[in-house]
Image (cartoon, rainbow, N blue to C red; front, side, top):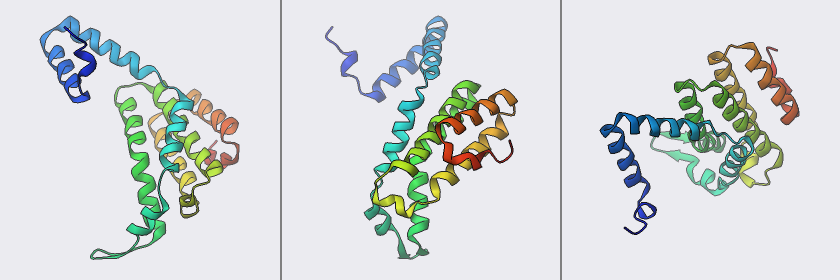
Length: 180
């Protein structure tokens, strides 16, 4: 048998895993354990880079093209910028939610830290022309994410660790720590 596994598409590989999970209890447990191991690997700097890259790649022309009048009314470039920003961030926010649903609070916190760092880097390092249309959006998104995370994670030690991270890695965003 040639390297058939290496030739599978992502959808085909997922289908095989789902079939194997339905067939065997022991194999299902092995696959679930490996999935948890994979999910436990949160590389903060890699994720922050992914967030930065996703935001930095937003084309200002797309913002201008989507802004303006339509059959639904007028959309300002600022509103369009916010929509484009949130659209790029949604997969990252979805992953935070998955960590919460899987009861993986350490990974949820680390992933939030990574998103906040990526947002911070975009605000302070990006040379993108789009950034001028998104001036307050990174801090607002970080603040909203932090607020939602705090509501779901009331443990003081985790909150203290998050605050220490923000003070160290995002020093100009100390105002996010309003209820310290």
